[in-house]
Image: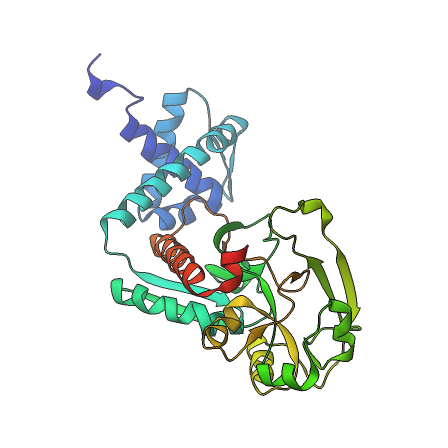
Length: 327
């Protein structure tokens, strides 16, 4: 048989099945034609040719509507995923060939965004001048799909399972104070002593309690960890770790803050870690993640930004975050 006479040639089948699928999704020949950018007669002809190839009616036509037959619906159902995969592959190839461009909408917590995310974006934007980033700083948990975000940076111990999470860096919560405060009030030797100190706490509903777990000395069994819960109070509660850190720097008390909030002041000697043989638990997260919705084809700009942030956070945490080094 001459290949030109083969009714199952891929280019013929592609255009005709695509026409049938357009009728199924758009609900009429007229709407399908508008969707495909061809005439209504062309859509009708392609479906008729596909019916001859298949050897069975694919549409039930009336003066008012068209409906797929059982055979037509089965054909559309069984080929839709293949067509979607081809379309995604073509889009991905076009994406790879083109200069990365587009808008990436990113959500991040206020403190993490100001201290770590914003500085990390600067070299990325210089490297990819056709990519624009919209950075929304908020401590609320946004709905990525409903609110149109491509990516969220989250400081958490348990990223949502329904989303795709990329680990950027481990973190740890630190208990910190200034040397001046500790000289004035004394250096606590056990978490229980914190009930007698001015503790600057994160603003959350209910009574304020801090939880600690002992850090085994080198060579000790991990199973010998002691756990302590202590009720604390102090002159300030705030829902931002930068505010708490700055209050500590003003000698107002002791606070739990993420290592990325305390790193610069610890390096400069302006803060001291309190009770280093105890680990605060259950308050701030254990890691920073880049979280995105699942999709068959992730835009190249989003992929590039995630990979850039992964490298930047790995370098920053190793170089600057004391908690990450001790994790």
